[in-house]
Length: 247
Image 1 (tube, rainbow, N blue to C red):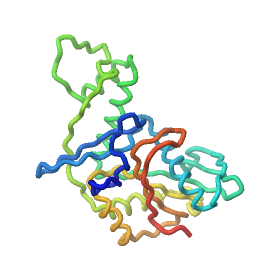
Image 2 (tube, rainbow, N blue to C red):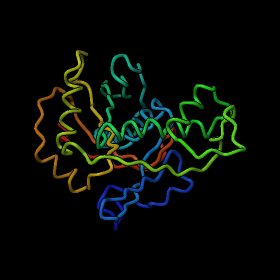
Image 3 (cartoon, rainbow, N blue to C red):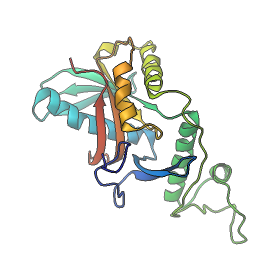
Image 4 (tube, rainbow, N blue to C red):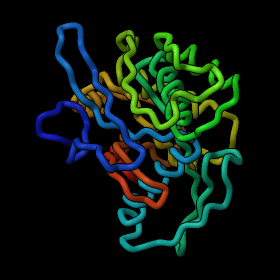
């Protein structure tokens, strides 16, 4: 965490050259601002795989005190990942996200659409129309509705978000309870990883909320993940926080 930030941050806040990363700038009502570096992945399945790799890089040495091979037995059947650990146990990993509010989830979805458009020279008319609604721009006489004018463009987007409707503790509790209520079997062999996409809560608020969190759930373990950047090969920077002590 950076010395000058009250939020979780990477050691080096400069994201230039880091893959799957972007900077979010929060501007408060009093005019103060804070730049937050956060993991940003266009494909949600890729994001989950990056989170899984980051989690295992810390978790496996902690549990087994050695390097371990990992075999993914299944994907989304029904848990996000069913894993077989070399010389160890089998368990599942389920990843769920939390954000300040529903509006932030909607904003993140729109930003992924924009990031995807920057990578593809040609888009369908339907996709272009959707992007025009999500990111309206001033008319340009040289602009064609038939072209993807977002391709390879560097853009800054501005949005207005309401403050969080709930405390961090409540956001955690709701997310955990929602997964606990699923009818899938095998919860006792499942590690729940909460992908923290919040922007409004300080690191102190997040950590102190764990002392008051009261949930009745069947999961093997629960962790919070805050990502800053990462690749499918496992490179990256992130913070992992235990919600409950490891048994």
